[in-house]
Amino acid sequence: MAKKKDNKVNRNVDKFTAKKEVKNEDSMLSKIEVKSPEDQEKVSKIVGTVFITLGLLLIGYGIFSFVRYSRNPEFDESLQAPSLSGTEILTKEENITIKGIADGYSEVFVYVDNEEVGRVKVSSEGDFEYSHKAEKEGKYAVSVAGVKGFPKRYISSQSDMRIVTVDRTGPEVKSLGYPREVGSEKFTLVGEAETGCSITIKRGTDVYTGKCDEKGEFKVIGIVLEEGPNVYTLEIQDEAGNVTKAEEKIKVTYSKESSVNGDAVYDENGLPVASGELEDALNFVLGNKLMMGFGIVALFGFLLSSAVVVLRRKEIA
Image (cartoon, rainbow, N blue to C red; front, side):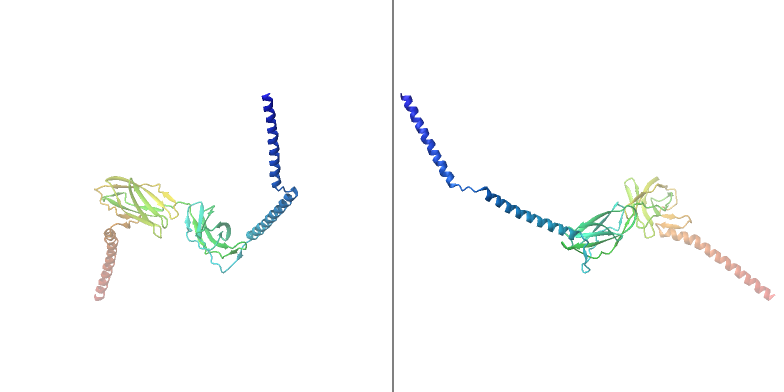
């Protein structure tokens, strides 16, 4: 009987709890404001329309700006042209590197031989750099013009032209002159190549250098010899950086028994062309050519005086 009473009590408690929970849910729902689907749809349409309109306006402005920006800029003679400072005038590379300063400009138009070949942006520091491929050797006339403004752009006049020479051919050794056997510890090498070339002579760790003058002629003095045969290599580098190694080795024998001065080099006519000592040249010229000239003059004087004496004798007789 006790169990039946307990079950009945529990059922009554459950019914009471359920009724209380239902009342609580009704009170919470009464506080929530429920909007109708029609109001949410109107708000979504308005917001969507606003964004679509803004998007169309931005697209239209972008197309307008692109068209205006893509058109050739308007020439403004009052603008100062950029400079080509830093652009090399001689190179052996495949590409010509065009550098310069373009303060106040956003872009630079690059011209080669008066034809536009490219465009490059100007850095925040006001400089620019452009690489142009040179198909062949020769001379190229390079210039640039500055561009500024947006969406309407203005262009300056072209800068002063800079002639860039592309040279990929190694220099030629036209002649060499040096003694083959000497009695001195040093010798002099002379020769001819191209104007401005650098000369390098090597034997082991010993290196000797020289420079070609405006005629392409060079002279390297004080090349040290060891007793016996000495073999040197010769390299010539032009101003563009091309290097030529002479096929002919320079071979000089140092013999103490020889009377030849290594610093006195003679050409094919027997004249000193690179004397390390002025005395050698003077002795050669004065002691040979000059003395021969005096001898010829003396011979003519003797013949002339003899003829005068003979004529006077005939007149007296």
